[in-house]
Image 1 (cartoon, rainbow, N blue to C red):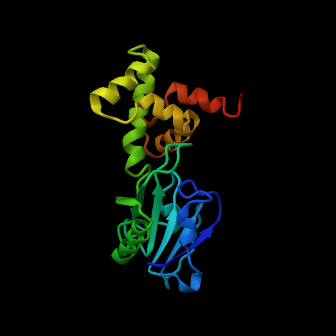
Image 2: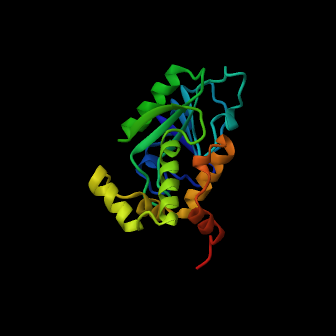
Length: 211
């Protein structure tokens, strides 16, 4: 599946130098258009138009209509834990009436690049952030409450649950201010208390840019 890339801003999932960028072809030869760094323009002449998402829904770019929205536009986000290197997982975002052929094409583009693909509905946080951010918030609050040290909580998760790293070390490595930004967006969109940024994330955001 041939794809052309347009870049309207910095890409979180596919930064400069990522091999995926070198696989693009000229627009006239492409079956699929990939918008890195956001942006969207309808292209009915293509099988799919892929729109890189941040915390926003695909509907922000395409519009919505009584739950009947959908076209050849597919959202995507390659999961990245803040300043960590991008992971190998790409979340595809579909709308209720997204064309099946567009999903197939989007999956083919990313799987050909050696990435793993999952498909989810157009909801804030998609799958990973909806699952992970409340866990990080809970761990940060338990740290504040003195349940255990950060070291002990992380060690418990690694040895007891088999995780490659613990919640405190992971969220701090990715950046607490980054965690704040995502949680703030999810809390504003969903209103669920679990997404309210933990105190340590609020502090990190307030100190952003401070040595």
